[in-house]
Structure formats: structure tokens, C-alpha cells
Image (cartoon, rainbow, N blue to C red; front, side, top):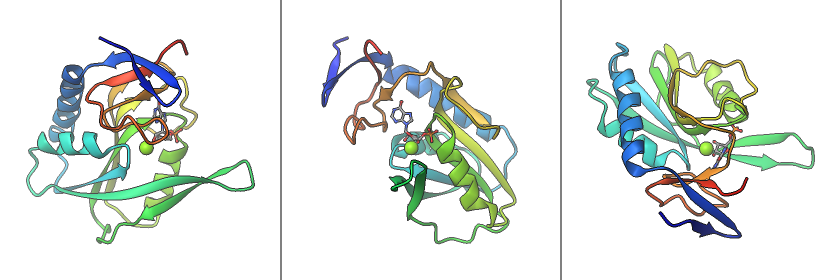
Length: 179
Ligand code: IMP
Ligand code: MG
């Protein structure tokens, strides 16, 4: 398989589309078998759009719903980053069984912000699922309920994940070469 170039960097194949398909099925099966009633899936845009679509295709729980929020980190004049909600939810969350769909959990900063957003919403339950997880980079104590695949602490692109906004369309996942 040939390497690919995005902007100034070279990437090599890491997780094939076939393997991704299996990982996604496994996550969906775990959720299907967890006895969650009428779940409301919430995908975090942009990165999770393909993962969310493929998970949903494999969900068999009756009355499942999906919605989307868009988060973007804004770096202010301080070194502490701020995560802004660019598209907000408009449905009632009170009493809902919410399942978050994330593309990748790295430091856990974004996950922490997501929990902050949901803290005041009086949801009945909140579960976290992610396609990829970097255990060596994770700095939080928040438990992650469904993990597709744990990976080494390398930068990856494809299947929704971007490098400076490009590479999201790639069907396979690639990792940065020589990192
Ligand atoms: P966090 O460090 O867990 O807050 O991750 C923040 C966000 O950075 C994730 O939701 C992704 O959008 C992005 N991100 C983290 N690691 C990678 C990567 O390896 N490739 C592409 N995006 C990443
Ligand atoms: Mg993301």
C-alpha cells in the first residue's frame, strides 16, 4: 500500500477499511447488548461523522435516535484552550439515555468539555463511545464505556479524522510516518 501525502506530511497505512468495519460492528454489538432503552446517540462533529453513520447502521435497538453537536477548540490569548459549541442541541435531554460518539480520545480535554455541557441537562444516563483511544496520551479519570481500538500515541488521519481539515474522506486510517 502506497504512502499518502497531506499538506507537508507523509502517512502510512495503519487500520484498513476492513478492520475499521469490524471495529465499528464490535462497538455497535456492545451497545446493542447493553440493555439501553431508546438511546439518543450524539455524534461530535466534525471528526465522528463517518463513525457515527456506520455505528448507526449496525444499531438494532428500537426507537434509537441520533443528533449532532459541533465543537471547536478556540485558543485565546491565554495558553488554556477553550472548546466552543458551534452547533447546539435543540431537543430535550432530560431523562434521555445519551450515548456520545467520538472519533478519537487523546488527552481527554474535549471529553471533559462534553461532560460539562451535559452536566446540567438531567440526562438519565450518559455513555461514551469512541472509535480510537490513545491510552498513553489520556490525562483524565473519566471512564470510557465503549472503545473501538486503543492505539499508540501517534497522529492518525482518515475515516473522518483530519490533518488541518484534509484527509477525512480516506476510507482507511493512516498514521504519521517516522513520528
Ligand atoms: P483530546 O486531546 O482528547 O481533547 O482530543 C481532541 C481532538 O483532537 C479529538 O476529538 C480529535 O478531533 C483531535 N485529535 C486527537 N488526536 C488526533 C489524531 O491523531 N488525528 C486527528 N485528530 C486528532
Ligand atoms: Mg474530534
